[in-house]
Amino acid sequence: MAVYTQVPAETLAAFLERYDVGTLVAAKGIAEGVENSNYLVDTTGADGTGARFILTLYEKRVDAADLPFFMALLDHLADKGLPVPPAVKDREGREIQELAGRPACLIRFLPGVSLSHPTPAQALAAGRAMADMHAAVADFTPTRANSMGMASWQPLFERCGRSLDEIAPGLHDDLGFAIDAVTAAWRPDDFDHVAIHADLFPDNVLMLGDKVTGLIDFYFACTDIRVYDLAIMHSAWSFDTTGRHHDAAVGDGLLRGYESRFPLSPFEQAQFRNLASGACIRFALSRAWDWLNTPADALVTRKDPLAYVRRLAHYAPELVRHAR
Image (cartoon, rainbow, N blue to C red):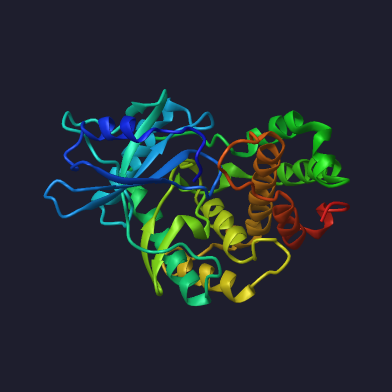
């Protein structure tokens, strides 16, 4: 989450008049993340007892044409009883709005906290929650191509170009070498494909104790390899934020939780390292692009691309020769 687009209080108050949520009490920008502009919004509530929401304004990386897919997926998962935050409909039944020149949605607030240092027990619960999500989309028919999938890596790498070496000497050559190696071994036609989250980091899972209370931020959701979703999650959960320290117990807990519902086949086990390496390439590239192009005046926390290069060195040390 982040704040790129500023929304004056008067504008927000007028926007809320479209809904049965009461009147504006307070709003605060949320600085974490890099994708959209987000505000924590408190209102008096429809019944006067108070209510809390997340207001999201979708920035350039999110295509407005993709929003119906995201909203349909959230509605589907909510109908299946999963702890996800569907968008609030206005008085005319609309979920997708426009605010400050951006597509926007008012989203239900879920209780819980995102984790900085998940325990193995929490990873077990989160892995099981991902498996529950994958089971719930078995009958979800809309599809969306992965905008950050394998086909996007080389073009994004070329857009970053030699500026990658401004982040770390040798980063350009390392990522170019890794892309060639991982894509050569990529076998998408041999895997099960479903709607995946594609970004289920610890900060996108809300928990109270060891219980998952929310799965949030579905704005990279797409149709892709089911086990790739698990590989993304493994690369995000089982390392510290620097990527230097791997917690095998957390990673194993995540896998046990997931495999309680979807045991990995021998083929999936054999391919998991390459899928995880692909996840590392994907996030190293998007973070590098953001690192090089984030506006200086944006209220946003940039994320270190080298943290994912170091993860890549864990999964495939032969692919990282310079930048660490």
